[in-house]
Length: 429
Image (cartoon, rainbow, N blue to C red):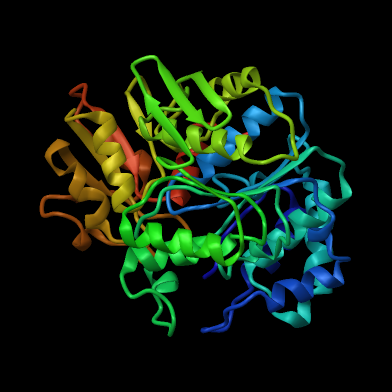
């Protein structure tokens, strides 16, 4: 699986071109290549500040955003690595609160690519190795690491002893990679997804999770017991409830009444609660209730139910942007817009299932316009409901819509969302 990136800085782009040329042999699984690469770099993964390691199908990026905002509200310096980027590759590596500079990024990528050339690492392995190298070099109080894909064989899973591990919402995604038949793994799809995500559990490290149905729940419990990892699962060791004005959280340490997130979507309160639970069940980094409350209100996470601001694309229209690409995301969008009629502009990667995202929204859609996902293989109009239209890009799709006052939702891919942010001059910082 490859990724794509571009930069206005020539030195960075030269390294991104090298990254884009990498490929992983079919069937290569395991952490051996990643560990060999890190060893050549001086094993930076063993010298990180306390790590918050987050997996999940949906919501793990938002959980990382809440963690970062709460820790920074306490005054902590925080490293963060998340994926994918939306507009600039630099978004993947945040060093002590700031996106990595172009000059340092070019230098760092060149070092990692040169030192590991004969190992055949992947795009993501190089990225994580570069992030860990920088995080080990620059002092900080905490480090937030988002799993890229799955968990068990993810490049981030070389971390030996995080402060805490977390698992967000589970859903069916990346089927081509996470549901490959393998002896000794669960057959039922969602249980297999849970098995893969729970692969981040570490010996004696608290594992904090949401609540899940029977099969997936059993896999999480099994993984925690196998690693002697203290398990804190919602509806067992902690609970959360959303009222009209507050997020109510409770665990053995006491009760909290916290504000609702400023990030749109009812599901974001669930992600915020998971972040709170992770902070409350680790014992390395101090955090106050006031910092949690401030962080929940301050957290931002672009392209997740984001209302676009005034810019070249909006032209006075009400336009929402979301990078969702699976059924869970489709249902979250349907829940948020609650039957409002909309014009849908959608672009989806060829590996995704259009019906999974579109079906939950079907009763609300006034029109569907299919656009390419720049730089990627994408589903043509034939994969979408009859009556859908095609446009060469998002600006053309918007121009063709009637001026009828209906909201516009642009969705289907985080890569498409990044292009929309770039076109509307809303670069993530």
